[in-house]
Image 1 (cartoon, one colour):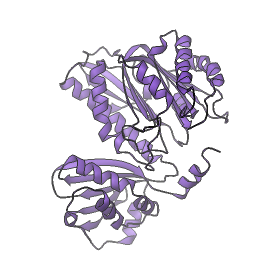
Image 2 (cartoon, rainbow, N blue to C red; image 1 turned 180 degrees about the vertical axis):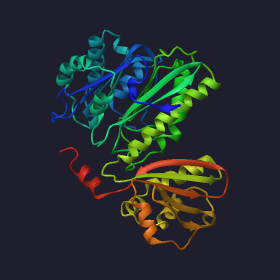
Image 3 (cartoon, rainbow, N blue to C red; image 1 turned 120 degrees about the vertical axis):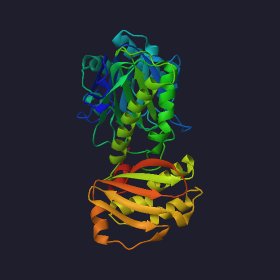
Image 4 (cartoon, rainbow, N blue to C red; image 1 turned 45 degrees about the horizontal axis):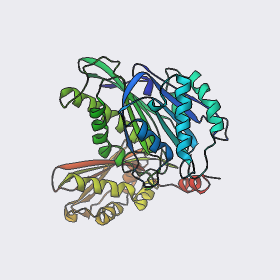
Length: 403
């Protein structure tokens, strides 16, 4: 397996496009994205666990109930959430997309992202869908730009891998910068592959991947109303269809994990106002739930995140977060190290501070990517979580997000 260019268009038979149609006021920002498979594809989705859900989620659930889809239509600038008639708007987006592509509207996944609680006017989308169909290309760039809101960089990745005796491709695009603390996925992620996988095994692969990837990302502790991950597999690689456990399923899951972990790091590193990507690696836990709880507690700690912004090796905040996490740990066994491209530094052993150079610590924590290594020394389970530092700009961005 290796990384390649192309994103969602890396897989055979997929095209994508993005245009500005007028949902967003800024004419320089694209706001309507489309991804299309040349043939009907197996489809798996995972959705937000927030009780308040965007209308597109209800429509998408209905459309993909048979395990298949062929296109994804997505607007940014308006979440189509908490609005009267929101589902009717989402259904009309599917109808218009199906009409423009000559496909069944029930084969369309629909998504929206942006401000919650404002009616979504279909007028610009109605005129924009024919334009985005005309804009379909073999590049993911415009589609990725069209799903971004407060994101500062596009999030695109792809890999090539072998499955069922054939060379297969998988790629994805994502948007996510704020309101990131999902219990299933994060904001919007669209993944495509030309591998042949049955709908049941596709859903299983995605559902089993989420707990160790998108569920382990946090920017600000807020779970969005519109979170959705969609995975399309059109089978054009010609491999033996993956329909059961085995070597082929393992190869497919490994490729999926590489794509999702890469997108997780991109999302965390582009957290609103962030200057640093934080990766917390917990090892030596008594069991997996303990490792997960500890990793997420540390990555979610506002005090710890603020310390990382200031390149302050305040390791006490790591232990503090572990202490209130609810995880059953032996505090007197905990080790903590900080690591980056500038080196590593040991700050805690067996629950106690050890002498270290503040100057070296400053150098280590001034890098763009920082790893927090926590050893619980109580077992063999481990977990990794991703987040970012907490900066002044986070408040600035969210203080006037709507206005």
